[in-house]
Image (cartoon, rainbow over all chains, first blue to last red; front, side, top):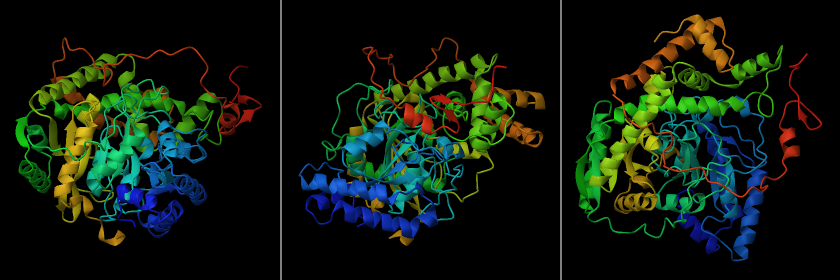
Length: 484
Length: 95
């Protein structure tokens, strides 16, 4: 049962091969068996999940089943879910029971999906290895001595270990695509504004975007059908007609122009990873696509720009954690200022504190023009590069991450090395474009991801292009031995 | 970019984060490394380039001025460490 796709699970429920209650119990049982070895979940609440499953079975009995009705979905612990502990991977929110549902959670509830639990993540989504979580690091099911990537590492490990059929995730600089790459999954970061950010704990508001993490592109399409859509509660949510991402999933890709940016194959890319990406390019040629060389000359600046803009926005967003209205409050303090400073010293982890301080510095008097304004200008240059590239091609293809999963502890003490994990993903966030990662092969039995970047609102096309690859290859069906 | 002890403490204070003497040096080194990375931006000429504040060219939408929020007072107060009736309690600010 753990091997079934969302499509197969949906069919199985419809044909009464199993009930939602049976399905949910099955996955809760897998959590009992395997979660302790990979630490993918922060909160599991069996009673809540089972109650949702029973409700889903009623809906199915009444004949009102939607695609995801009755299917257990793991939810990243960044999404507020009413009555559920929602921590964002931080001690700061260890006692926070969300008093309302985020829009993403509401949509899954309305679709009759079952919340299987809240997945582990880097603290406030700041990290690329899941080692900054207050709840301990997540381990990669492909090799538990390695990291699953981050920040959506819990979601990635949960799906890769087949503890959940699918999961939600968020991506500010690569937090869906890099863990999808390291765990052998398909993950989509949609165009900025396509999925509502309401109730999704904010990191960098001009970059944050939620998306699905699944085994297949087709499953991601089914998830997007639920997650996307305009939301008046999020002022940056885009008002446009809702698409059905499954409709065109089988479209032919003959004549598709795939742009390959030479900057994505320069120094820093593991040569074995490069070979696997080249094999992916060959596969697309066989499928009738045309390959064109393109250039993204400012891509190398995306990391410096990101480490101004994201911390600046984070320093402002995270100022709300002051110990007054909710979250952690220090035990002993002299006055209000002392309470703020001690609460934040004790409640935040090192990486979060570093980023808040960088953000505070670049926004402080005398430095704003040199850092923040400069970064915003280069952000435009990076965005213009994509505009020019899409005059020559329909989609861009490259690696999702420079390497496969690395050993736990390998980069933890060196933030600069860690930041390089997102060298191929950050520019899409800065431009607001959609990006997808899908499995393209194995290197030393660890997955390698191929990234596809599309123009604004081209998610249906990206999913179609990935689906055609997956109907002709088998990489997405591979699973880690010990979790079969 | 080098931070001395006073500078790092000033930034920490602006960020409302306590930082002790032992940590200050370690934090300075890490922040200096990150700023070194950021300084790659200086190689780019950005004269006459319009800053990009947002990924998409959108304007803030307007809506009718009516109450849409539900009353969450009770639920919200329950989340706090210290409350008194309908108030959040903090240390005395005004003598």
